[in-house]
Length: 324
Ligand code: 8YV
Image (tube, rainbow, N blue to C red; front, side, top):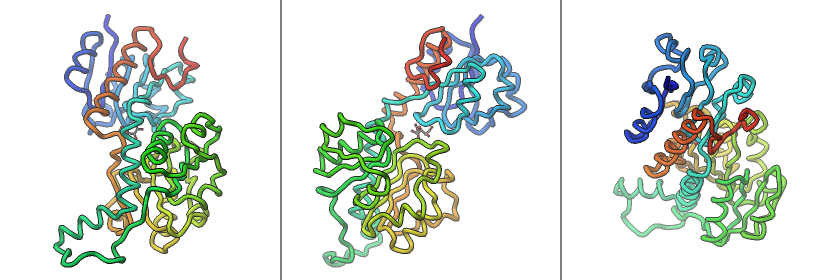
């Protein structure tokens, strides 16, 4: 008998066909809650769930006693209670590597647009305000030769740093639990305590995963450490930053500007002042959102779930202790 899969995320027709060849596949629309009463029967029989932004709770896991694997189409898995999965012997697979460079491109796009005021000035041209050559009131600040402070120095953080060091001659600082000697020799990167990094960097770019330890890692005190000319970039998760403290810092000249791809609440509520602030570039969580990369992420998740349900080791297994 074929194993049963629940899909709640964007897969191509070819990817769905690949899964349908091997498994009994039920596709749920994004608009349905995974644990809605009408999905109970599906969950009760499911061996695997694949999708993005999956709302996984212990109650949902109780309702899915046959579940072997969850494959999220994302590198981040802060929406998934990993310990609960591990306790129940359920594998969790994610999609690292394939999105590293694209997400780093997004980070660098934010560095460039904030420093050079690209969005603000493009809007200004659109509004027919370009009547004479611009003066210092509209000048930006340089990127090349400046200091880039990476908060978190995993795959994506390193890829942003590589762009800065090799493409823009930036000096790279990083704060990370472990030292990265290879990157120190490759890029001349120097490790710093968080507070020292905040004080020295012209650009502070956050790439740490969201965990209990990193929630609100950056708040009032951290913004106060930054230079008043400092630019803050977040391509990690909104909750790593105390957003109220960020708004206060931006409104009061504690820091100069911010480029944000992620927010405490997504989609950003209409009441948020952030998108309307001239010194903010706010993006709708586009970190990995290119055709090529979203397709590669979906394929990685398909490969992960196929391998897991065929009894083989998935390519990207988060809770490795679960694999027999
Ligand atoms: C996701 C992301 O694709 O991978 C991650 O962790 O943040 C994005 O690239 C997005 O959350 C949609 O699932």
